[in-house]
Image (tube, rainbow, N blue to C red; front, side, top):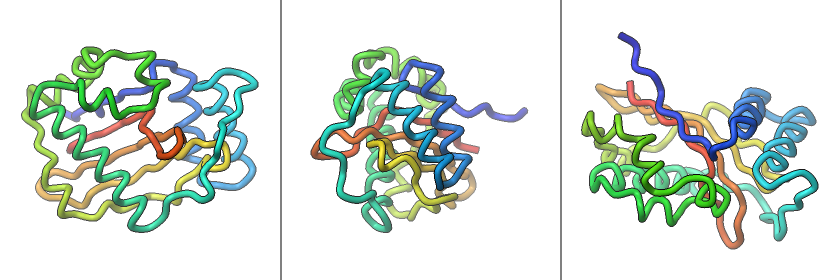
Length: 174
């Protein structure tokens, strides 16, 4: 039986669609348009992201951002308490979902006792460079080459000065 990926989006299906399109495009004008669409879906039509980052995170900085997210998720799963995780996600997501909602979304991880602590010692492998940065949205996808289970992810971040904050996540442990 194939395990279905757990998906937690910012609560707006358009956001998820825009994120997946942007991630598949991989760059260029089409990805920029998809990033703008994601920004509008998240922030509202005509919204402008203020204080855009000077540059997208790359290399070790991107690895730290993704790994921090995964370890924050792990801590919430192990504690069965998503309040600290909820406090770290973007303000957009916090307005659309409570910590209880996030716990229900990841209940399968809790039930299966998924432990992601080993990711602290493994570097993520990215499928493609991040997209959407010019619009204040950062879309990344990749995996951790762990065994016996492989952890894959698609993460969306929103620039909320002074940092990138999670606003969508898809994590699968196979």
